[in-house]
Length: 395
Image (cartoon, rainbow, N blue to C red):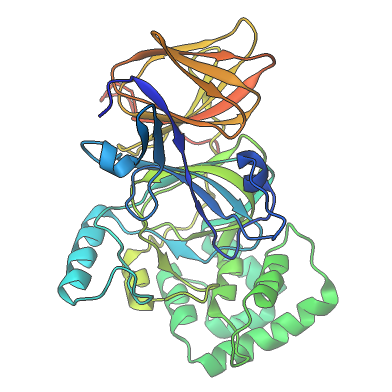
């Protein structure tokens, strides 16, 4: 590690096809006249796309600089189009799956690979713009109401057991999937459902994910089986292992364990392993909790979760209201609004909008606004008494 207590970073951009064209290029001051999708900005030490440390002696990949990998991965994500229906494994399943696929000789880059590493991937996110997502199964009562609105879905069977219902949806012969979805989607084309309706997203999914043979993607069923959530800026959710979800539209800051393990349930051209996904899922219906952040000081609001590897904070500083703290572990920051200066002793990092910085463990530091107010998001380790549970989510 360098002796400096803090230094600037450059994140790694992922150009997935569903990414937006404007938010991340503007944030990072990158010309995107070619309209290339900018989907995710990764800030971490994951070997797939490590951040780069900008040091006085030169640039170095963060994963080569640190004695141990960061336990978390911080992202800024811009969903222009819907992401896949997905869930993440728990730690034991990830370790077993990674070892199994290694033993089978499946390359890490192989499209049929489920496990890219041996870690689980709980994640928390906070909306930066208005944000739409699917999160967890609806209650059976709510699913029954959807079946009444859309009687074509009755062919999946009576909604009396979530595991049985979703297993049926994911294992029906393709001809039966098409026999259900084709008349349903034809009707919706005429009805023009509103954006706050699952039917709107089912129709949008059908348009965005046409299959080459003209058949329908069974992931469309999930639009009716999962909770549709609209988040306002500053609100978020937590996705533990096994919770089926999908990001639909918007920009967020996302913090997760240091993993890239995803098991998909449709709405994607990528690999879908139905048996492995079904082994992963939590079949509990309910309304997802919305995280609003807990103020812990005049400048910091924390989005608490049960995760042991990470904690996400929003830091707002203004003239005369600096943020002061002692890093309890490795901490990473990204500036999303305004300009600030990060200081520790004689060391400083200037933080314009889009700038990223890293603070080593056990260092006192200060963040001062440079002019008007500035807003940063911080990835850190949780700091709470072992006997105190995390604050509950707001229903």
